[in-house]
Length: 202
Image 1 (cartoon, rainbow, N blue to C red):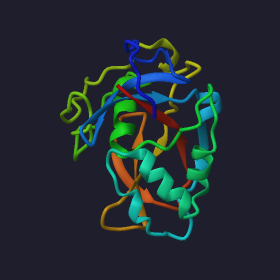
Image 2: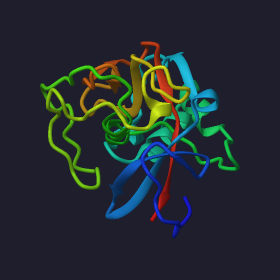
Image 3: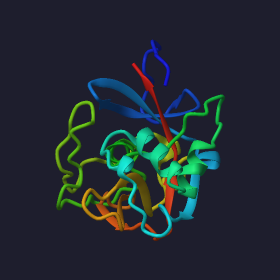
């Protein structure tokens, strides 16, 4: 991930091979989070990993790059797909962590539906600034037209995998729905969507 001295663009506008999604703090360092173009950086209906394998290196709530590397080394085809992407001259794409995926929903929410307002959905200590639980009307649908429902870059009204495996049960990994923001976990052999991201240190 390279140093970036370029002023940050508006949310949802082109930036370093993809689209600017927001800011995340990882190990005390601030990064710009960049979502891959949908046509080349979204995967449909894939398992997180087969055989319910435990991946000790994929437990991070914020560092999706480290999670994805660990997943790929453990044999995850989904992680290998993400790490194999070369888009816009960048080859450091990966599956977003739970907190990175939350930033994508919060800032690039495709629908006008009310948000899911229970459990930890919306709490993100890694976001810059850190965020509180969702309210029914917050976050609102993104103002980035291309990411609104029906737009060419919009997330589908569906479940998306994060790269964060459940901390106490390796049969499960975390996901987020993009129709109302629910953050939960499901069996790693479920076939869900995934959208690659990359980050740039700022």
